[in-house]
Image (cartoon, rainbow, N blue to C red):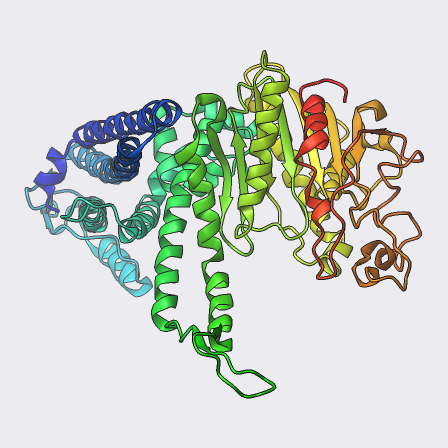
Length: 611
């Protein structure tokens, strides 16, 4: 970039353009929310039939298009702000160099050269003449730097050294501007959609690439913004977010959606917006990965003729599945597992019928077994908030059932107390153990979850718009997570605790959970294997984890006293006995707390009543 162009550059013009793109992003975002929260929800709530189904299908695609435009326009805005920031810094350096040169009696040419006046001690009766120094840049090589200093020191006119300094500063400013232009030009060119009218998985992969590119290129600009707290302190997070301007929020959200989405203490709407972007990007990658897997592993022949093992005969029309297909199908399901979990989350946004059941994605991470936090209902405005912590075996791939539990509890609580709003949260904000008889016997998963759950619960209280009745609902290993968290955070903003199917909660007495023993409610179905102890020689002996856990612990359950026991000192509530365990390892009673009397009683507790 030449001197005239940098002098004429107006950062404000690019900042105004950034404001325009940000306004467009916000406008499109509001249109998307109207489609999702009013139009589509209204159709689902009032209409049915083929026409309604077709309309919802088209509206879903339109919403996806709007989300893409919303995200890309926000990135363009951030990129333009970043470019203006870099160019403004270069221009300030140029202007400072020009002012200093003028004050020193030097003249700067249109090409950046610096003409200096005569000056210095007379030599042979003459004052050393002036001259011109060509524009340059400050030497970075030690040898070149030494040679420049030597030339300055040897020159009889002291103005020569000043001119060299000005020329270097001018050259540095021009180079900085040229580098900024070179850096940002391809980033801005990349921020455009394909020629077609379909937002594809590839387009969302490009969004991720665009985000990374703008974030890397805009490091200087982004570092100039108020930095978020280093630790996940919900109150500090909330104060930081409130202190940002709308522009700063948009810029940070556009390039750090994963970080914003994970910040406890921020409004649910903000976290939801951020995590929806992360989800769309992850879904696109998962879909492309799954498609690639299918291409690499073609489906083998599924059926083969049945051969009678005794006679060797092949009855006509009778076939069985091949072992090759069974192995392939098992591998296919594993390959598709995370994708299915993402679709289960997205289904909630496509099927809710009114604002009270609107889902908010408060956390999402598809690495390892995945993490998902989703609220049914707005936790920032609800009178009652229940946070359900699932246990062993929970992962992104299997998240559909756990979200359903949050849904039915919210629905039943709304019926139990229709005069108050209830939000029901499914909190898989930790790496849950995956195997019952190995992982679940180790408290390390709960140990690692104590701070995340504590921060989340504090964040819900911090972001809330008024008083809130907060209940923690732990199931199975999730009761240990809940118990340890409450044990180690005496001032946690929790009013009630529900513990179902518990192997222990890390304390021997309900009072050690710091909310009052009369606010701790526990239940275990009679036929839940956590509570069942059949004779050692019985058919269910291999399925008796309680007997296995006793090898490691003298207590009645693995992690402290049984929460339903008199020794624990809490409250209990009635649940159905549940179905008996099966010899193939299934534990139906362990999963039947979200139905019948158990669900009714949990809804009463969540809404502040007594079962």
